[in-house]
Length: 206
Image 1 (tube, rainbow, N blue to C red):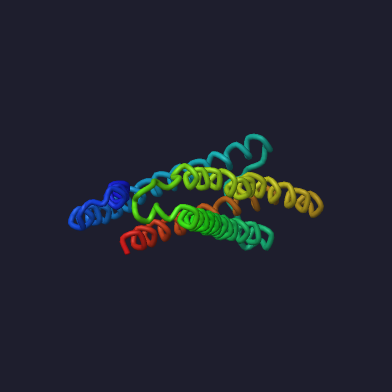
Image 2: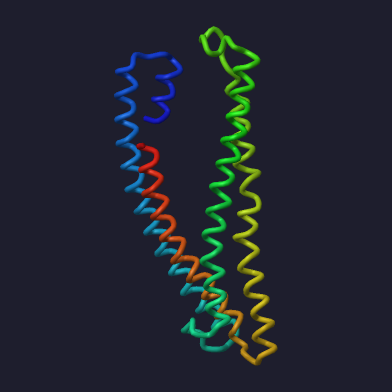
C-alpha cells in the first residue's frame, strides 16, 4: 500500500485514490507492527535457548560447573551494563545512518530540480536510479561499523575479563562477565525492539 501511494502520486491520480491508498497504508502499518511483535517474541526465545547452550558448552569445555551468574560481583555487573549500552549505541548508529542517508537524498533531489526544472511540470522524468543507488550504497556502507561492533565487542569483553580473572584467581570470571553481557543485552534489546516497533508504526501513520 505504501508503494501504491507513491505510484498514485507519480501518475497524478485523483485525490480520492490517494485517500484510499493512505487508509490501506495505515492498516498495513498496524498489521506489520503486530506481526513484528511475534517475530520479536520468537527471536527472544531463540536468544534464551542460545544463552543456555552457551553455558552448557562452556561447562563442557572448561570442565567446571557453570549454571549461575552472580550480578552482585562488580565485574559481572559492569559486563551487563556494557551489554545494555551496546544496544543503545547500535540503535543510535542505525538512526544516525538513516538521517545521514536521507540528507544525501534531499541534496540529490534538490540538485535534480535545479538542473532540470521540467521535473516539476512532469515534462521530464527524474533520475530515480541515482537516489536508489545512494540509498543502497549507504545501507551497506553505514552498517559496516555497527556490524563489526556486534561481533568484536563480546570477544573483547570475554578476553579482557578472562585475563582479569586469571590474575585474581577466578577462572570463571571471563565467562560470567560475557554471560552477563549477553543476558543484559538480550533483555535490553527485546525492550528496545518493542519500543521501536510501536513508535515506528505510530510515526509512519502520523
